[in-house]
Length: 212
Image (cartoon, rainbow, N blue to C red; front, top):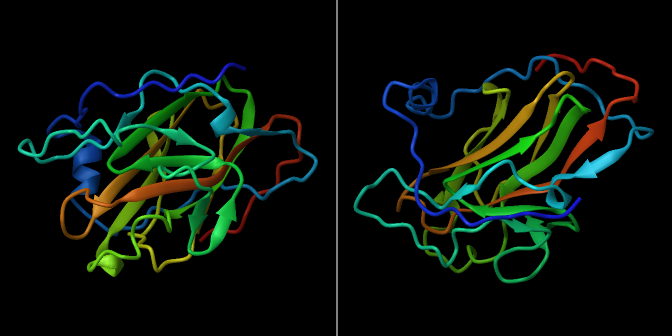
């Protein structure tokens, strides 16, 4: 499959009163992972970094109308960080994955071909350790399936270990990955990553995970 990654041509913001705006007005409220599934080593794995996105990714947009998009970093990057190195979250190195500056929305078409989505998410080690507000530069990661929120992490910073995401995709047509900046200074220095972001194709044994 030919890789197609296109730069966003401007900020896209949720409409006032939309469910996403209402949700994001309540930071740090956990959403239970209903229907999560355990991994199956026999299933075929497809990495998101090898697939085209569905439309233009919206990367680096801000809720502040006075803070313009900087298109120098407003790109989705596959299998490496903005500096050209490997994606690394709190010392965990990933050969495959997605790198994007918050705020970000990235959508993929699934066509009901996959059982589940798995990834480890967090802030990339590159570019944050010299920042005087290092520990406060956080982001939340939200996962939507067919427009419905299925998972929302706590606000993660550079000092946090990667958070594991496992989402049931059976029968799903779209997957949207979102990152939202939390903490001081708007979206500054929010280098969000989905390490080993991958899909498992239908055919593997499904086994329901314990509720959390």
